[in-house]
Length: 128
Image (cartoon, rainbow, N blue to C red):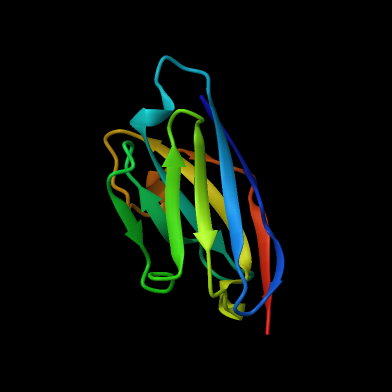
């Protein structure tokens, strides 16, 4: 099993920055470094959308067009953590943000239904 706990959400004005973190606890024979990790978000009344993904080694990343150039995903396999640095935030970035995990084989741009483990979410609110 994998347990994921997000942190770092909050309220910020447009143009500001936030850094989200996700701590992973892996209680199986598999290690954190065998999981694709992703960040997803869901705004009220909207479907959950993929924001960014990262390969098990961290060598490959994926970003949705809406955040490309503004967000950076990273992971530390020694600490079992996942991060999302969000810069130049816009009001349309307001949503609940979730980290998710999928053991290999996996696709870093995979849709939400491909991910098997989810955190409880952290709220990001960007005001204009």
